Every structure is written in structure tokens, then in C-alpha cells.
Length: 334
Image 1 (cartoon, one colour):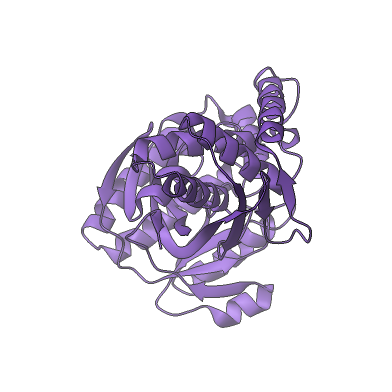
Image 2: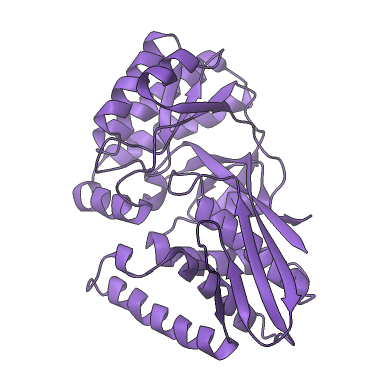
């Protein structure tokens, strides 16, 4: 059995959403697929991309592992370690999600399992990869255990897992991946919106040298009490209105304003800034989607609003580009 969950892009309000301000995000046509298959014995095996030898664990071993991760996260909360030290390997996220969901649902498994992940969502680029992969895993587990699908449960289990990687997740990644479509998100509450009809292209500038969690914490150190978050809020409110009325000219202007604010908080690397400036000179608009980076010259995904695909400009910078569309569906069985 397979479960699929879409990735996401934030159209407006990155970072500001952490401070209680609104963000607008949409699910996209890139997804994670988790396949769950019974196997003999009592081992739970994880078949993950990029890992040659899969990991296998007993349920008791996974419970011991979860207790260790809970302690490490508490050390992060207490300021003893950085968020980057909570997880030791990519597989940790999925091991935690499995046992946390199993125990949260108060169910048992009567055989071994193989948990296989495949994904078309780039990792570490602000597209909600971890939320989508975790949600597809949780949904597959729930279906296998014949549990009635309760969106609120899966949302909470996803957030509990996400905090190990991002420290203080806003919840927007999990909400959009779970429900699909487009929504205004603020303080854990979402208001659905129509998907934008403007042409969009996704540009890969490379995996940032700082993680989402590290980037969020660095911004917090410098801008936690700044008035700039009210400026983000004004832009997002206007962006919502522009999408509802399909006002492309206003959308372009607001994307540029959003980029200006993201640059001001220091999460747009200099090379990416130059690329975005070139997009603007060509008549389009662009902004990073996700946390960006506070180190190096790679900024993850840049969302470009333009009438045509910016192939030549992307080739000049060594970036890859592809069209991107919204996904009206969320996490589901396939």
C-alpha cells in the first residue's frame, strides 16, 4: 500500500509566520510516496533514498531510540545544543515518526514491515520535503493499521516529528501537505484560497549551507523584536487580495517587495540576489521559497513569476528551472 503527500512552496510570509504573522502557501506537483509492505519476522526496515543499506529495528529498539531523541530535543529546548545536533542521520526522522505514530494510535503490529520512501521533492530547499515524507509515512501506517483517518491526528504527529529537524515549526508545511491546495496560514489556523493562476517556475539554486532550523534561529537572534514582521504582514495581506482577484501586475510588485524584506533579514545569498535582480530587469519577479540561507551562496528554491521560462538566465548562473503547478489534493492513499 502506498500513501502520497505533496510538497509545498510559500508564496508570501516566510519567516514572518514563525512570529504569528500570516503566510500564503500552496501544495505543488512534487510529492513523496511511502510504501508499506509486511515482511516475516519482527523487524521494521527502512528503505530510503541515498542509503545503500537499509536499517532494521525491533519495536522495543525503536522505543528506546525515541526516548533518546526526546532527551536530545529537550537539551535543544534548554539551550544546551543546537537543533542540528538532535538528529544524527536522515533515517532518524522516519524511525521516530513510525514509533511515535504507532504508540500514539495505541496499536500493535503483528509482523515485520518494510517502509520504502521515494520522493520527487528536493531535500533541504524550502519545499516541505520533511513534512511531506513524514505525512506520507504516517498516512500509510494509519491505513495499514485500519485506523479511521483523522486529519488532526496526523497533523499533530507530523509536527511532533518536524520539531526534531526544524526546532520550532510553524505548522504551515504539515498543513499544506496534509490538505493540499492553497491557504492563508496564521497561528496554526488556515483559510483555504484558490490556487494562483499566474505562470510560475521553480529555480534550483542549490541546497543551502544552513539548515532551515539554523536559519530560523539565526534570524530570531537578530530580528525577533523587529518591526519588519509587520511589513511582511502587509505584503502578505495584499498578496492574498491580488491572488483572489488574479491581479498579475500587483502580484509581481508584491513578490518584489517580499524579496526586499527577505534580503533585509539576511536570508538571500548575494549570488541569488543578483539572479533575482536580473529576473526583475527582464520584467519578471522572484523570491526564495523557504528559509533561504545565512551561509554560502545557495538559497534553495527561487520561485519565478514570468511569462516564459528563464532558461538562458538560469544557464548563466548554473541553475536548473522547471514549471511548477499547484496540487489541489493533499495526503492520500494511492
